[in-house]
Length: 145
Image (cartoon, rainbow, N blue to C red; front, side, top):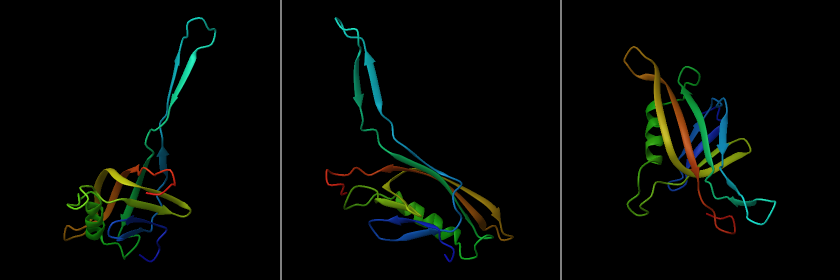
């Protein structure tokens, strides 16, 4: 696409999907668990902290043929489908990379919802709305995947 402001990359095949319409926002979340328990013979409670909650990225991307003539709704749908396809060799779905400006998020597709909108006279969708949820890939002690 000519006006690309971001992209999603299939890290296995190196295929890329550019998007030209900025999402309204993207939300990154990580959960932590904090337990406070009373302790006998002490005025202060015992506090235990457990990290390890997976980071998730949630966003909505819109691909609109009326806003960008280079958008091919069928190709977008096919690319997104490939991110959820299990490989026979790895027994896993491919690792994906979401990039927009300075922000990057590497992980696996956790959920996707597709909504088709505005149709041509021949019944072809002119707009595709993707609600994406990605789960961060775990990294080793060197920060490598």
